[in-house]
Length: 297
Image 1 (cartoon, rainbow, N blue to C red):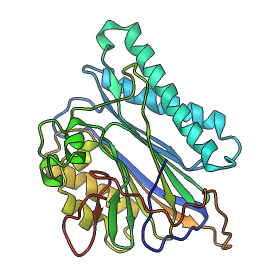
Image 2 (cartoon, rainbow, N blue to C red; image 1 turned 180 degrees about the vertical axis):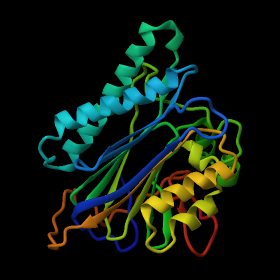
Image 3 (cartoon, rainbow, N blue to C red; image 1 turned 60 degrees about the vertical axis):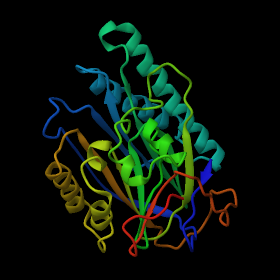
Image 4 (tube, rainbow, N blue to C red; image 1 turned 120 degrees about the vertical axis):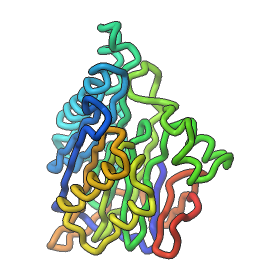
């Protein structure tokens, strides 16, 4: 599991999660193939973007949400004792979703090839944990920085990772939507896992590519780093901006802001990696106030 660190990280336990979510068909697609999972009592949030034609994509993403929800509710009846247990529950939930969507595709010839992305965020005690399949994204806003916590599992992202294209070319590349893996194709999943420490003031965004594909990243940075945004208003503004940018795909997002235990109870679920810096060429990207585009880290 990759440990992602910001300067000055210090753990703080959470008790409350403020959140807002939206999903919109967009201006071009006839149906909405995105699905959302919001389980604030467990600290579990997920965006799934389905594919497959007809209603197959819609059913695929809905099944991902149902499978992950059921697995989490069944296996998180007690708080996880350590990061390894939580990581295992996340992996098993996504693998169960993979099998369930694949089984659906085998029962109906019209649904063969159906699949979905899955960007799963879990908040627990002092930490955040992300499991990633596909090209939906999870972002974290902290101290005026916007960091993409996930990698796009696409052919274009692999070119970026290899240094063959830059970040600007990524957003226009013809292979930016060609997934290297998805939920439901019957192949074993290689789930990208990452984790980090929570900070007071953290803001998370989970979204489908119908949002990020129609808002320029500097504009996304500007909207998300405004001081103390109201989450409902911000969610509406993000959808409106994606529609104004063309609205060529379904638009889905979850915004959430964890708030600390008012009693100041500090305790750690982590492995003691607080001083570990992880760098990955072509990996998650920072946006800061001093530059529109920063190098991949």
